[in-house]
Image (tube, rainbow, N blue to C red; front, top):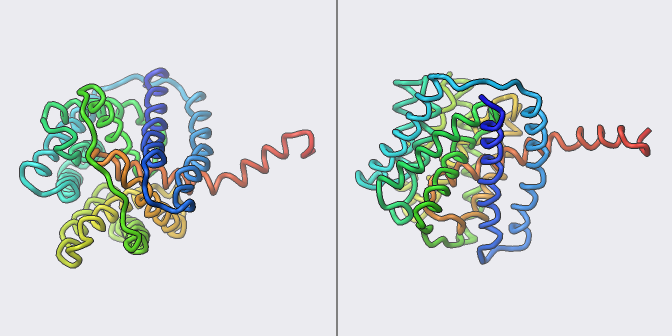
Length: 323
């Protein structure tokens, strides 16, 4: 992929989470100072990985676009419109619609499973944000182009596809002059349940991949569909929220072993994901890809935190005082 295109993709994967985190800070949620510090901590440790990716990107060879890239971009856009139809017009809701599309494509057409899953996150957008299929198609097209542009950037981090979907939605909302839904702060009493569900489902997704042999897309979609079906029945009052949390954390479990090596690291990223979910609840309400972006920043934060001691030691060793 040509250097400038790849650079644009890299920037999109940094700007999109920044917009979400900034929106959470600017919103007036009734949260403690401790929880409000979460976006700053996540952004700080995430920059460690961002800098590593920037260095790798600058030294990588340029690669041209090919036919596969076109297929992937079309798969993203198509899945976005299909999921929106299931979500809004068929009444499945965002979690079940996206998980169903991801599971079906992941099992039947695995070669475009990742691209279609990315598009399905675009289709989770609320009809109050993008009320027309044209708006969704624009968002899906932008996300598809971003999917191609970022093929070699931040690979292996869970939530990357959702971040690209949110980038598409942000672009479409801006171009059409649309607005987001009214967001609200979560009730304090549900925070422990959110964190527990996030940790359990992140780990469960990894177990499905490593022990059941499922692909990352199929494992995440299966967890999301199960949560989307079960939670509203078992816990009617919290079902919708916990289903969203479970789906969000399942993206953490999509991370490769190169990025999060142990189940403990995955569980830690799941815990961070639960906290970030609470903090960003009022921001960009109704936008597709918000859950994935939440998972993405959580994975970057944990991976960056793990890299930070090594980075500090190397910088100290290179300084005159460290010699």
